[in-house]
Length: 415
Image: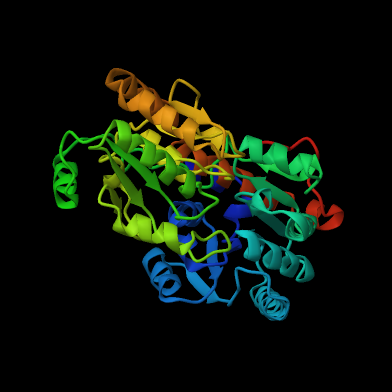
């Protein structure tokens, strides 16, 4: 029996029957990073229903993981009429399912699902705060997003934050009272599979470099994630242009896709990425583990995060990371030990950090070893998911108190 299952089965509230948890996301593509989280909940005795927008990925994921799926169309952008329809559908779904607990995350599902859960009087309601989109918004849009975050938090019993700095930022913005803000373990939504994300090189990496047309001794800077402005891709491209002036054989490996979101890249930058002879852009990749082993350094010049999975995965793979001092990302690196931190929006700082590490192979290797050890100690998947399941087990025990007071005791700010 796993430690996760044992921790939950000791709880009589959970072991008496299979409690039903509804996990809600906006887009089925997010399900790919929920796989281990949902498996842990199922292993611990929960019955799981996954709710997201429709699509073949939702159906295939539900089949592969043995969970129930419910498709509720949700638009990622603000769409008042469509949002009201989605809210009504979510409310009807929750009224029919009568779950013991809901966990809604991602901006639109987090808002609509939290409100629907409140209206349906779900006994335990969790808003999973993965990041704050409002951090890169301005003016009226920022005020609307802040109001939406506060409403989602108000309709939930707890706001589960992905990182310590995200929790502090949510508190400073008044998104929720501090007593509602929680951190499971040291953060992260699912932790890292440290066996899957492990250092190379190996034969597969050699084959992959050869397949990509990258010379064995070429310096490779990597990036993993959505190709958007908020991820700092424009600054990364500008910094890479500067890197080529000093290291003309360097290559930029972009493991990601052009996301059609509000912070989408402009057409000129997309064309540059697609046509640049020193840039390799993979498009969407389901299995990212082999790609980290091609990299000498990974760069995530993001403007906002919850706690970036890609940074932790790179670290577990023994790759030093350059990322920013933005919320969430600064929690994913130990400065000067596992990687380097730079201010967001400064291509010259990214370039300086890249040159510093690419010119110093012993330092890179030392950082890579330290990064992997740090992830194993703090963010190994079993450790993170055990903290999550124990927290949810405890919340189920508090069901009557939550329904009565619609809050969580101030003493339980962190588990």
